[in-house]
Image 1 (tube, rainbow, N blue to C red):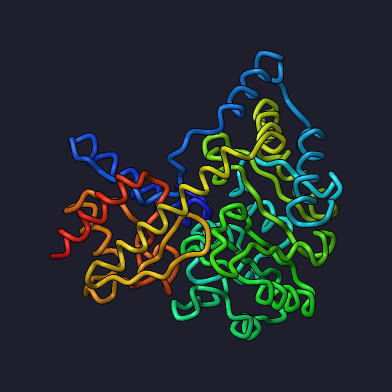
Image 2: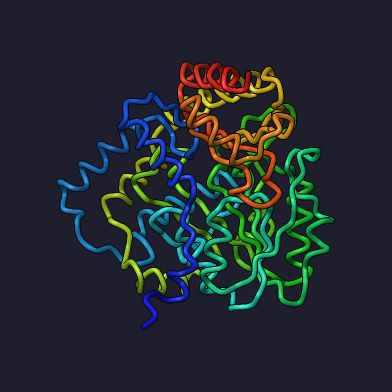
Length: 389
């Protein structure tokens, strides 16, 4: 008898969590591990958001909500989109979800048939390829290059579009590299999607986390069709509001797409907890001073880790424009990505993630998440340097 389904046999999970599990085992043995492997802010969730959740719980918001999400949430989310991206979606264009990962699954499952193609970057966030393959679709990779600061070259992308291409995924600011695409690059990619009449999924989970160096600013392709025709805008509260454990996000897309995605969400997980939705409403409507303070701290940490890594022999690191990741090149150390990461965990007690976990083009690189204190980052740099001597 066959024990598992084909789906279960091919599950990959997120290897960063597997590294976290290794690091936790070392901590149980008494090791002092510095965690730079997983994208989880070290800040607490905003106090006003926690208070709003508690108030909602005490007020009885502990029952089902409608599957698409509370109207109050979607109305506020629409206004936030108008402020941040310049257009006002209808509430029927917005679906409330438990985080952003499930938005990817819902989108792929509702829009892409088995055998059809989805273009992703290489390297890319690990869930893209895992979920695409889970849905039976084909992953097509456009490589990112260090010499181009890990930004998509539209000419490279254009060559990969075929009659079987159903969707393009972009992610700016980018995980794992922290790159931020400019307006010209974003528009060129949108034009490719429009020309070939394919969907464009824009993962904007790190949209608030742009450090505005020189000309670095956030741009979204959603402005070109206002998410009414082909653009799907993925968003979550996890990173910018330090709400990873709350599992709350929203996707904006054409109404006909949201209708189908809402039915699938209703089928597999019913709805998002209403008290969590009301806490998110508080996050969107109250002062953003707490969030702005976190981003200012991330910028300091970025500057610290980039400077420190570039002073270690065998390592050089591009300065990322956004998110809270750096993606240094470690090929001059003579180690593979996995060998380097294993050495750092076992010898230096610093947990990081091999670049090849994010795709073949990530070999020779590693990802550091600098969502940790300046003190811990400084200690990690010291330990890394000693481990390589």
